[in-house]
Length: 91
Figure (cartoon, rainbow, N blue to C red):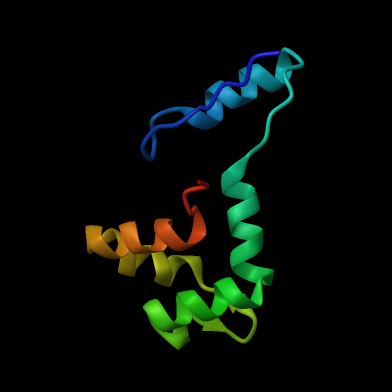
């Protein structure tokens, strides 16, 4: 069995390619979906996001993804910091 990683920037067509793979019966794992779930449910990750950015990104227990996007897409270093805690390198 081969394992293929599908990467690319925002709007590069990853979801379209994943849809084709899925329709062909290829097992697919969507890390973005898992990351979104973790940012809503994992207390350690939530605390890291709040410490790195602002507490008001969470409204109650729910992450305001629009506010987070405004913060990280206005500053590349903040996007890199977010990616480092949400998608850590496995060594």
